[in-house]
Length: 174
Length: 174
DNA sequence: GGTTAATGTTTTAAGCCTAAAATAGTTTGT
DNA sequence: ACAAACTATTTTAGGCTTAAAACATTAACC
Image (spheres, helix red, strand yellow):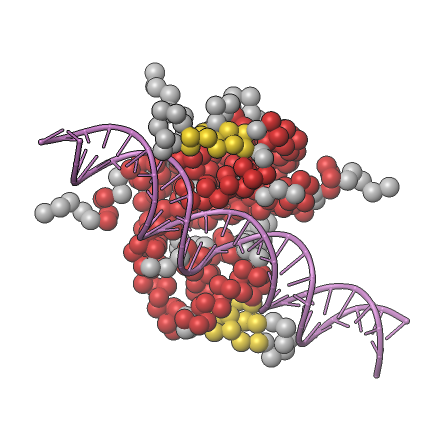
């Protein structure tokens, strides 16, 4: 028989036996995400002198040769529009990106990585990829595949609930 | 046969076919965590007028009748010590917590929830629990159990790597 | 017993993030 | 054509977060 693992000293410490499975899954999920995110943040700063949000923004822009609108970018980064504004402000002043109004719709601004931005990303990207592999390294491939599938379900479940949050909040109107 | 799900417009949008499973699991995990966290944050503010970090801090303190030291609290919240300081500052000025030096070690400060703090948490807690259940609601119990197990493995894997980050960084010492 | 190292906490500086209000351009209905 | 509604983005105000430096107390070591 195995010995029990030591109780975690993080978010999960607040979970008790009588908590529902839901809550315990959530706390554990959050722990994992926070641990990985914190470590990637530290390494990006230490090895390359960039912040995590900076890297995330550049990574999203890198894929899109035609760039992204401000709204699309903030949606992808999962942050508010205002937040994206300040991130892109910095990218532009650094010379890593440009921001140009669309000719057909003057409201829309399209953000594109410059040559300099692309080069910067290419310098960091391989290390980032390696770090993720390291952090997940001892998890078996089959487990990762299962996890991928289960998370897809969970994500779908969340999206559904976000589309129809009415059931508990207000009941049916009279 | 099923139709393919629409491509996500979040973090995962940056993943491509040639990315490793590691990376795709990570992006999906992050998506899930961010979606849930953002929704809980919105509801806490809208329904109870409190912030998510405020709730997290109070939730951790609620369990511990003897309170927590500043270090223990920041470890549990997975934030820096400095961050915990400002959170507790606010709890104390609001009257939701007290901060007292330990008699045996004057360096250590022990934070405890006040009666007012406990009452505030008890008012919010049931709704929070319900929200988590709602967001995960359409995920089957067996899937949640599997997820719980797989995340345990992943978490262990991460912890291992964080303890021994030497393999790639410096090799073995001469 | 006095210096040095270690530990616990706070402060500081800079950047991140949200929610809400404001601005500006576009579409719709008449 | 004009007003109203809608959409895209920025601004503002306030709070969150980190990393590094500073401060204070305790432990370790001659």
